[in-house]
Length: 391
Image (cartoon, rainbow, N blue to C red; front, side, top):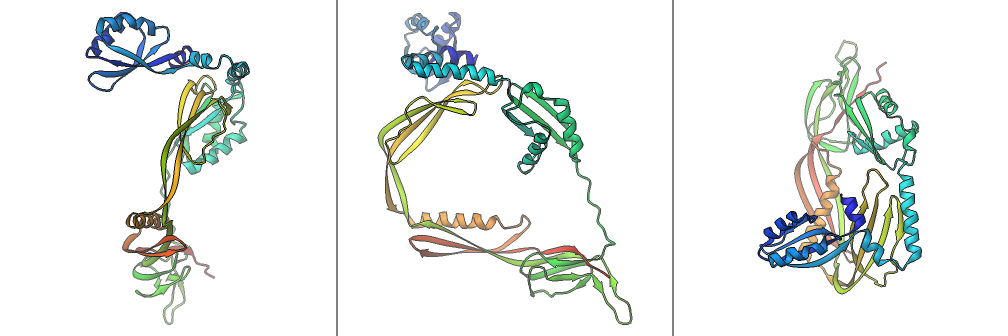
């Protein structure tokens, strides 16, 4: 019905009066198509009415004493009326509509459900190797073959389902639980540092202590040895294991300009409309924007939704001219913003299991910018088990 109303045209109306409920009841009794009702206040509401049903509201208005006004006009009828003298544009729209129906026999969207964002690209490559890609004929799709190939080529996938809905191919993937990894206690190993740190404490399950608490260690330095030596006894190689906790320091800087941009609307506006057909864009209005500085507001009016046909919609971009000036920023607010930015940069490097022991910030002004340096001290596990090359 939404597509039908968009094609035939409808109006958004504002209804004012004290008998709003009676107004709706009479519309239903007269079989007047009204939808999208929204209550603004006790005496005001908005609704949508088809173009052919709008004149029939006169009798309802007389019987209820309500006032009705049109706030917006939407749909294909009004677009045609607005551009009826632009023959070349209408001809282009007609050709584009024909192309839309033609392109509905292709696959224009592929969605994969049940995989992470990092895995999505890998699954798309697998589909492409099977000949499945955006722009292919729907008749060439073998859904059963897609499902079987995903299960066979991915050990963690236990079930897959491929569905075709209009121009969109949706593939749902279900993964099984991964078996717990077996710990190999026979292979000789040692524990090394994963980063520069100061050793805080050690829990050695097996192996030889190679460093002391409070000692500074470098990345790659041996912490727990896998070679056990005793007097008058041959060397013994063990599977070194344990936890080594160290203090690690992180530092990141962030800067912000001392002057901030203040933008105020001038009141001048310009609207540019585009017709979006799938991946194509057809300008309806001239695209020249005479404003040096402007903010934009975009509204979409869907004509044909994604499903049976290629998506088609009208996009209206409202350009609002602004007067832009440089003004000194509030120093306290600037410090807070720079501090947050520096902290977010440090947080990107912190392991999830790290305990924050200390955190401070140092500020300075460099070349017209406020610089904030975040310094963070953490306590974290720095040991990593690696294989020992025993003779």
